[in-house]
Length: 268
Image 1 (cartoon, helix red, strand yellow):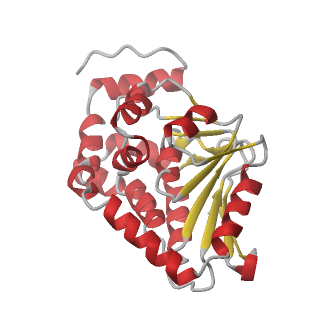
Image 2: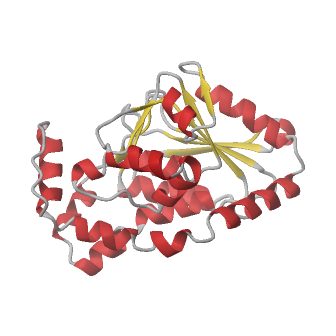
Image 3: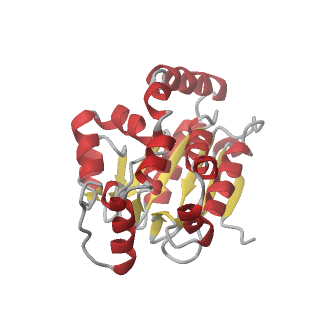
């Protein structure tokens, strides 16, 4: 099995910064089921790591992530799964985003190129996001006849508010520029092209200089307050996704995407 994720520890002040690099080497960085598992394992590997207080997550130089891999054989097998198998398989994404959100360490995403769909879902599960000025985000799920899942809608809502979240998710073909993402509150910092990682490491160094226990407790308090009611709404993500995947519009959306044509949705 190829290794899509590399972890480097002991960087920065007192060696308290770690870097998790997700790079499939194809300038697309799609999230196959195996990539989801590896990234989840990477987050969980820090559970007992008292020496690391900041984790920087970065993708490749041309892509943070293109989102879920619609061409991956395991991913495509969803089309023939029974509902029980499909629901179990659909938990891979929420499990990934939850693992990163629940980390005790402060997490910072460094985004170059494009960050699409599941890439956005992963990014908004982090504490901070740094984006290159020539990068963009896009949330294409609705355009594929799906819903935006992985419990990312409430996370986006906390960052941007209702109208911007609807704008980002419903206008599925619209790119969100780095300037817009910063203006909307979707990212905290915009860096020069090719410098998102450097800027993220500079921010990480500032965090790493703070007392680790106080930082961890503060993160936990803010997250518990902000996300206290999220499960009430987002527990239904998986079932909405499973339901949407049975529609004719979903089949049309994916077929149009793979065929590079404009979809024709019928509302059924």
